Structures are given as C-alpha cells and as structure tokens.
Amino acid sequence: QKEVEQDPGPLSVPEGAIVSLNCTYSNSAFQYFMWYRQYSRKGPELLMYTYSSGNKEDGRFTAQVDKSSKYISLFIRDSQPSDSATYLCAMSAFGSSNTGKLIFGQGTTLQVKP
Amino acid sequence: DAGVTQSPTHLIKTRGQQVTLRCSPKSGHDTVSWYQQALGQGPQFIFQYYEEEERQRGNFPDRFSGHQFPNYSSELNVNALLLGDSALYLCASSLAGVNEQFFGPGTRLTVL
Image (cartoon, one colour):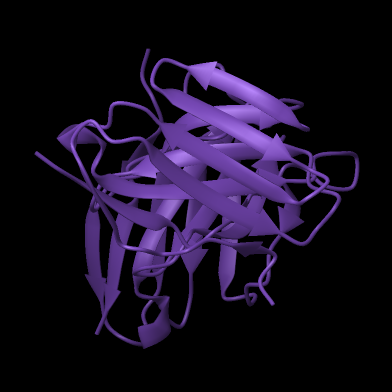
C-alpha cells in the first residue's frame, strides 16, 4: 500500500464548476500538507501549504485537512480552462529526524472544458 | 526574484553513461532537494542537501549521488545509467526549518 493515495482521473468538468480533489494517507506522522499544480512538461507549482488539520483559503482555492480521517482535499471554485493541469498532493513529517522529505500522490489530471 | 533554475532542460544519454544535472535554488534558500518523476507518477524523493552535506536520502541506489556548493547550488550525478532512469528530474529549494519547497522546471533525461 502506498503512503499517499490519489485518484489519477482524468477528471473532466465544465467551466465554472466546483472541482474537488482528494488524497488519503496512511502515515499518522504527517503534519504538513501541500497541493501542487503541474502543467504538462513543467515543474510543480506550490498552490497551498497547510499545517495540521483545518481549512485554508486562497482566492478560488480551498484546502482542507482532516487528520482524524487521514484525508485531505483541494476545492477549486469557478474553474477555468487555465486550471487544466495535473494536481499533486504532497505531505511530510517534518522534524528533527525528518528534514521535510515530501511524499507525493500520483497526481490527478483535471480538464476544464470551455 | 529568480526562482529555482535547472540545467540542462533536456538530455539524451545511452545506457552505461554518466550524467550531471545542475540546480540553483531560489534566492535566500539554503536547502536543496532532488526528486525523480516518472511519466504519469508523482515525484519521488532522492536526497536533500543542507550545509553542503546530504541530510536525508530516499530509496535510490548509490549510483545516484549529489553535491552542494558554498553558494547553495547543487548537482545530481547518476552513474551507469539504466533505461529506467529516464524521467523528469526536479530540484526543489527551501529555507532550513521551513517546509515549503519550491520546484524548478526540471531536467528531462532520456536514456537510450
């Protein structure tokens, strides 16, 4: 079993839809949770960074972390064709014995159709 | 403010050869991590460098080695290349004690 599970999709939605992307994980030591966006043949771009449980909002993006369920989500409101990309969740157990090695999900490919 | 830069952009090698990839971290960052991303997969952690030393290593063989220079830039070396080493190699930089990692555009390595 992988430490981080993410449905690869693809996920196709119409422009303006609300998109929900999710990851589950097995390592209860994870404390830091990130979402990256990766366009084809480019490096990942950091979208959201959260610590422990709770919600964080940034413009059209909302990240949620539920540590009790080992489940994280990214919501995209009013999705645009420019949001079409692969979304990667990542997490780490940062501390004295762990320097912040990121464990990634497989990535979910999102297509937003005009 | 320059972000993370990597060179070269693309590289084609044959089996058994050796390759060196380079990374310059984001201004102000002192920690560099390297990841390998196979097609259709998430990045996998290779190792991390801080203060010119390897601080943590993932499940990669000794054929993968690295170096960090006094100006915080870093190199990834891969010896005895295998077909399975074909991937996008990503460099990420961060500030020690802060977990946010910022990625460069990557180097796409093709091994024939």
